[in-house]
Image (cartoon, rainbow, N blue to C red):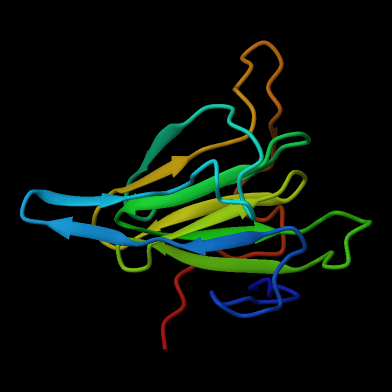
Length: 166
């Protein structure tokens, strides 16, 4: 049986999880290739502080989920390929508790998605090529005491990662 999210939010709609912010990104192409700014310190609505930057490669069809952070805010952009980034709000004091947001981001829809602390998140690489996801979190990873709380990707939250045909 498929678990249906309480709320589905397509990109660009207003029923977004409390604290989630997005920014459409712009590719600047020329004959040498392309450039894309992801996050700037003068992005007044998005930038708070810098912790580190990293790239995560995901193979086609693979799900990397679920986890949340108690302190860290994540800033995700998929710069190659496509991912379905999914957020689930389990915060009991949130006005959007129980909401699920899906964002289809990457080469076909360049977008930064900011995920606040305490919101579960994960993604699935969709399409036929690997995806490259850049994250610019507000905190540096601490191997001795990671700010990371994980669940299994299937059957633990009200979301079904299956492809929807139709």
